[in-house]
Length: 187
Image (tube, rainbow, N blue to C red; front, side, top):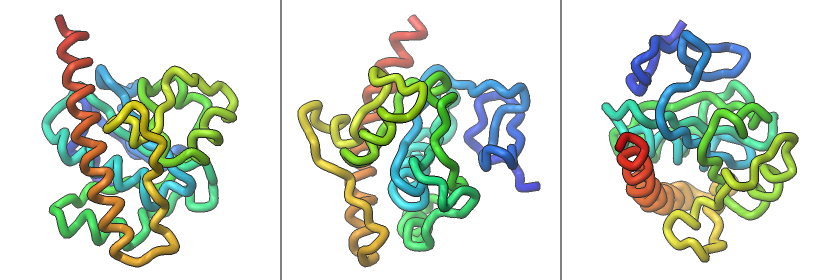
């Protein structure tokens, strides 16, 4: 069994093989704010976004970050090697295994963030979808944006670099919003 990652929420984390992720020992996801990134296969964009945001949150226990895919063909796999390479070159070594979106995610997460319009359509069509929790990643930078975070899977390493920079900016915007939400909730 792998050792738990450093982003625990004050609970002991155990690796849940059926869900391909670490979960609190008590079965409840901790944190005041829970963020789920979603893309198609959960091996390029959403795990990159998860790793970036989790890296920026090191030491903060009021946020739980995860990722998922709308498809199931990569469940249990590590992120694409090009995703891992881009992250490692920036000192980010925390990666999760791919999993598929679940209906329970709409209850467990406060923010479900899709990478492009097709992801948003698939998320909103999911059984149990909660539209008020769903947003497009680029809308965190500009509420009127319809820009996708493009899927780099069939592209070059330069495409992965470009996606990293876009997700890095989006993560900063999410942090500003989360900081406001957490401070507001604790007052």
